[in-house]
Length: 163
Image 1 (tube, rainbow, N blue to C red):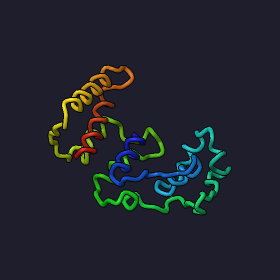
Image 2: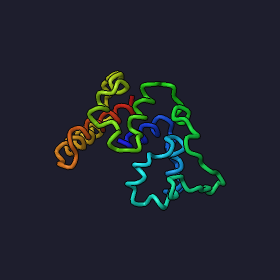
Image 3: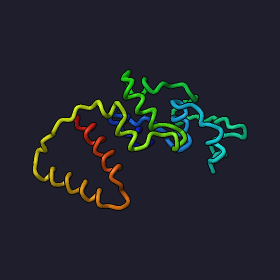
Image 4: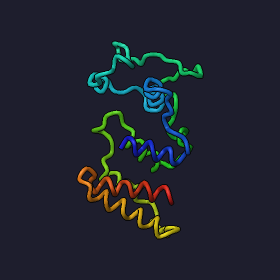
């Protein structure tokens, strides 16, 4: 669900939500928007010493452009250029530090922002496009590694992309 939130934000803005240059900078980008991860989350992280000091404070880094990133210094609404409360709530539900606290695929499908989308049939430009789309969803649904919910969540993303 984390990835879904990041992808939807990127589709909306045209830019990655957390454009880190490397894993340390990427984590700093995330903390700019979400703040520091909970201590309980840090204690369970096997590589915490690479990113945080003994007290749980992030190690100070400067990126290649000389920029220092500060936790809680950016607002998600500003980052995604939106004041749509439903959209922002959906993104916030996806972007939680603890995976157990993130919205589930079933909950996402029932979220007010998703439910408010107007369903429109889109005619493919060619039969090949329709056949390819149908075949990919049919094969994904048959794949034991991908449950029906994943396919449905993917359909919502595709619908949203072509809205």
